[in-house]
Length: 192
Image 1 (cartoon, rainbow, N blue to C red):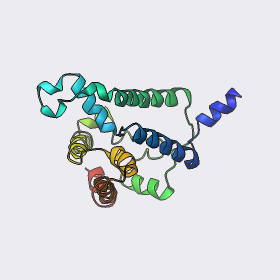
Image 2 (image 1 turned 180 degrees about the vertical axis):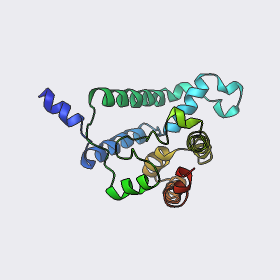
Image 3 (image 1 turned 120 degrees about the vertical axis):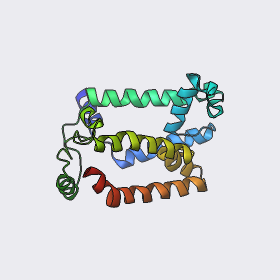
Image 4 (image 1 turned 90 degrees about the vertical axis):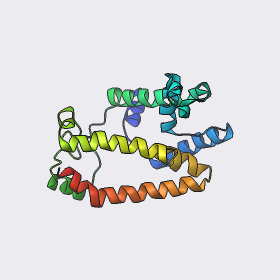
């Protein structure tokens, strides 16, 4: 029984399991009047650490959002458990055409690791490419999350579940931005 369960847990779960689980979680959040957003966890951490002394944005009762911190802790613990105890030896499922395109751009580890070391490594942080990807990209993600009043999970999962028009607009924007980045901007950034 245990080996079968370990085998099941070490494989990606099918959509017909994950989809209903996400639906159940969203139903429970809506029922209890909560919203889901990973960026809310960061705001709660900052508020708990006293950031309200520097900005009114963090001046709220962060104790009401402790469940968000539990979610964040669970995500981190789950990722650690999954990688340490249920590793998947299979290569990352990327189409052959994408691997060939990335290799033509100089990204040789595609399909072997989620964050190719030729782009995402401490050594590359001090190169122009690494600075653009990690520092400028990180700033843009943080700025965009704040400007859009939420992240992709908050808008695309929680906001759409609540039938919020701003979340639909934001989600469309995420997809348009992703397509523009992938097809028009990323090749030039990788070539840096």
